[in-house]
Image (cartoon, rainbow, N blue to C red; front, side):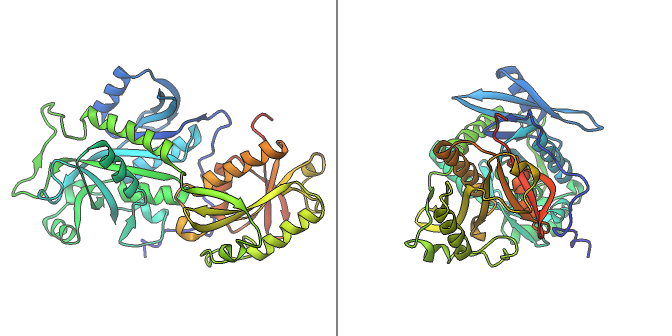
Amino acid sequence: MITDSFDDKSESKINPCLKENAAEVDACIVTFSHVIESYVKDNYDLEQIGQSAAVTGNLPIYRLCRNGKKFAFIKSYAGASACVATIEDTLSEVKTDKYIVFGGSGCLNKEIAHGKVMIPTEAYRDEGTSYHYAPASDYITVKNADIVAEFMESSGIPFVKGKTWTTDSFYRETINNFEKRKADGCISVEMECSAIQAMCDFRGLDLYMFLTCGDLLDAPKHIYRSGDGKYKGTQHDAAHFEIALSLAEYAAKSENTDISIELLTDLNIDEVRKIQRDDISTDFVDDADTIMELTQYGIDHGCIGDTYAIKYKSEYIGVILLGEAIEWETDPPEMKETPFYRLMGFVLDKRYRGSGIGSYVLEKVIDTCYKKYGARPIALGCHKNNHGAERFYLKHGFKKTKYTEGNDYYYLRYPSNE
């Protein structure tokens, strides 16, 4: 079937690759509106830090600052494939794992959604792009809908949560399909949400999305609400950029307050054993007991480093070891010339992947290790078929080498000042 396009068993021929001089920002804000782009250029001090190159014209990526935070901003082309390609391009130009996306939509239920910001909770996948990033399904969950709703509520902004219908064909939103989607609980129709969420899940990014009602489909005749320069309350309303910017600040400063790490010991190992990781083979990542044995081996041999149990609120959800690398015969030549750390056993409960927790924990553990023991290069082994982990580590500055230990390729990361 054509919907079976998802392939996570082989590498892509083309991949985004973060540039060494890429600007680090707290989040990237994406609009589809040329009116909003003009507003931002006229009202903010912008610096161009990159671009998405396209045959139809290059799209500049800007940086703006507010309240000590740095944000990227880009106007994307509309439509699932064009928007996803644009965001993928930014992955080479800016370093962030948070994307704030806002745009227009058609309103499918005027009694529920009309006049309010719409926060998609699930997206019906009536487009083709998402099937290259996620296994086939009718709907995809929009993971950070609750966080967006918390922000809207705390800001006093009227909103409604519900399903959205993502379609590739603006002119084929037929009456029968409209009725089906409305009966299914969809309150809006747009052209990007399901594809962006699938791509973000695949790349390990956090998506924060909200929609504005531009068209009213839930009426005897199609009502288009953003013509004749009447932008207030539509997708061209500059106030919605201000909402997106405040949401970006909210996502940047409120994240990770419920995440903590503590040393792995006999007191918490039983809880760590309970994490849901049945989809991750021990060929890919060692189990908790093996990591505990490796930790004790390091202690017995006087190695510096630590092994942490990862907690979300009161629940144990993962484990990670970062410690002094004892030399192995298979180590790359670089590791035999200078002291290294070795990263091992990093795994999260499957319920918490794709939420930004893994990125936060990795950088926190590295930062803690550097402050406690001093900076060194880091080595890890990643199974040749563990493509999800490969994407994750490449995103975090690890470089794949040609050297292997069994089925694992060595990946190396050097301190940022080297």
